[in-house]
Image (cartoon, rainbow, N blue to C red; front, side):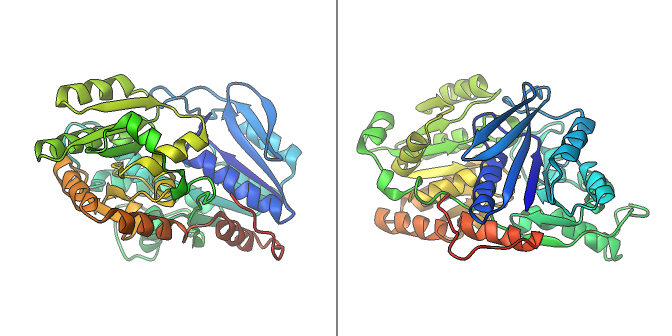
Length: 406
């Protein structure tokens, strides 16, 4: 069976959608299927990744998004799909590619829309005033209404919906309630029934991200033994709210707990965030993008705690990679991260004060216990299970004993 997965915002070097697409494609291939990835890029091209073809469609850069691109010619993708002749179509986009659901229906190809983000969260993240003050609520009623209207037009174009967490599924569930008349947001005449909604958690590479990657040399290069090493692994863009992590570490230090910050990632706010750390007196190493996955794994395993402050994250693969590395995570309570982290860390309101208290609480736990809890939590999330769940949704055969490491 040929399964074609089309996406926007596919990172040129890293990113959650990229990781998810390749993780699932490896599983599809292991079960004897033919995955093809279609993504935006600088020019039309074809490359191969672990035996999986990656077809790039020319797309412009999105300003202020750290290298992400957006396909503005969906007709070109439809022509490409005509040539690829998929048996199943997956789409990871809520912007310019939603019309692919109509293409799939016209040619009789079953389709799935991945809900990797929440529209209301995106609207809030890039709306006026974001970042000027602590976040008190994930979204407002006006943005919720706009999101419902957008979702009411686009979600019914697909046969099935897949969400990675209950948080990510929330918009679709709210839309289904609107359709059944259980809520009112002034949305007249939804054009179609909300498709069946499935929950499929993503996985983590448990071989690459392992507590055994902990390195005394890596830790010593970033923080003395007497100081806590707090790590952020994130794109340095507006919606990720890395400023909250900087301010939370500043509060730790003001409370008398020696701590240093290491930030791995690149993006349009890099200089702004470095200046913020200097102003707040936070010793911080800005490592930019770390291309070597083994170095990333060593960094995560060598940290005392990882902070994931983004208020609207719908899964958080970087946080899951930290847990797999034996490092607890402090995350925003307004995101999906509480579902991922469980008891292997702590969650708090996305404010410096609350995050600092959560950091204190995690750092006060015995080191062996907190590292063991983090790894045990990550072991609940496997790519093999995710791949098999998606193949079941597609009605595709699954080979016995075909599981492969991520």
